Length: 356
Image 1: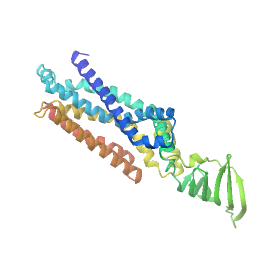
Image 2: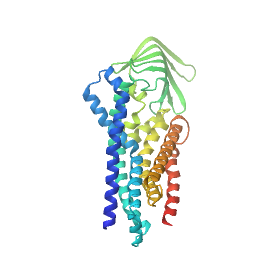
Image 3: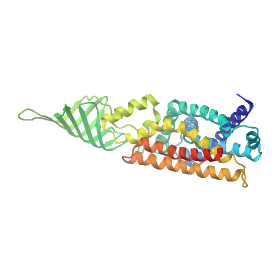
Image 4: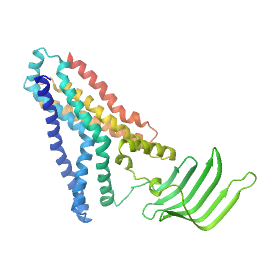
């Protein structure tokens, strides 16, 4: 690798690292200022707080690192342009494509790190981050789905609970329907179901077995029995997808699809983002270089203003389409990749003009 490559690559990685070191403490300070009242009020142990902010650091970096990278590339490339170093490079016979090469090498390194972080490291941090938030800051509010739970628990059985209390593990208006092929074989219903020591207690139990000529109905005031499902499987926490490594997440989504979960969109958004974020590193790097490699009258400030505006638009697209996929039938894969598609086209246009 030539001197030019080493020079730009080191500046690329160093500036990105400094941007993380600068903004992560700011993020921690802002978060602590917002949460300190509840932390003191609920007397949260210091080790739990320390672990929370360690997890927060990884969670925060994984969430916003493409934006930090984008701003860092604009900053140091603008500095090169203002010092006429880029003019010197290009005047010596280096093509713009050749000048871009160390940036793409740096983007490959960062994208690889981002891929490993998103696939394996961030899920563990997300679990600790969300567990602390719901345990100490939200009192487990909205932690699980509690109304109108409808699930397919295996190939043959479907259950429904009108309401569910995760603290007492008690549900109301419970039904279980067992099918063989397309035919209903029996239906179990109860006014309430409670999970007690690995067994389920049904109150006002009724079982209706469908016969060839007439149905058989069995009723009991109380029935203790076993089922092939677990309460935690029926009502997974809202943030469960963020805490699973990629292989676990893929299997979890397939299982939830068979169960008829209403949260598939949310889970698939998390899955596709594990791939889209590393790709965004290349797109944002190309945009940053194309914009900031030209010396402008307004200097670095103009480029940084453009960078901040572009970053805000990118985050806006990412959040809006992500919420659409989570809350509606909008395709999760389209929602996740649409910002990269739009900004990829912008990157191609800016790169074409920069070469000219």
